[in-house]
Image (cartoon, rainbow, N blue to C red; front, top):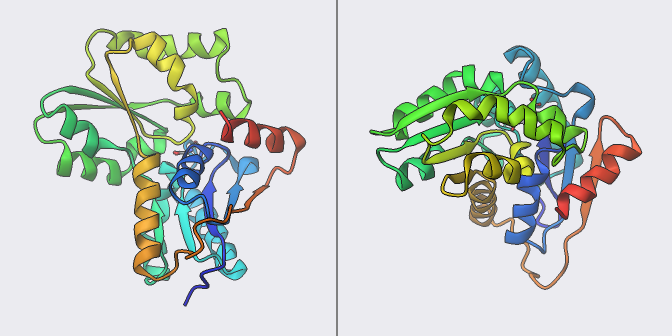
Length: 257
Ligand code: DGL
């Protein structure tokens, strides 16, 4: 049984999960959160399924040893590789893995053209295809692998001419044809402005961060693990397998972005 006073662990291959963490802080400002980024092993999206599964499981095992009361896998790639196994390992743990926001996008545009941007692994894995089968309905859901995009964010490069050039190269073919874009990697919300500038503001952008935050809150509540003292200010602890000042500075910059 978890301890109400323990932190919630949030995990990503790097700093992308900060886009989920910031939503979690809005939804549960009174909770302590422990954020772990595995930047030394990033990117995950171009690794093998087995590698990502092993890495993810070993991080979650450590969070359990630390006594975390809940876990958010704030990485779509790690979710597709490991969440099913983690649920088997920890059946009573409030554990939520982010997945691309296909459902809300299709609800908004039931017969629209919806682009799903994600890492090569997320695009390849069965989980996304099942999600599209289940919720895609009559919409035209177009998966687009974006290898290399997360590296810009990891380097703190989110509004340079290079990132605009990179995004134009991959998005120009879809210009004028889309109703919505699903940001299926937690790094991508940090380049949302560039995506909007390129595709135009009439294209709606969907990101799973808020839905994931509400879901972990619901799960913690159900388990009786939400703090009662909602007036307190939660503590945010940051750790990264690449323990550099650059990552620490970028973490706080992105959290306040
Ligand atoms: N942030 C991760 C995701 O949501 C992936 C980035 C990576 O390739 O490591 O999929």
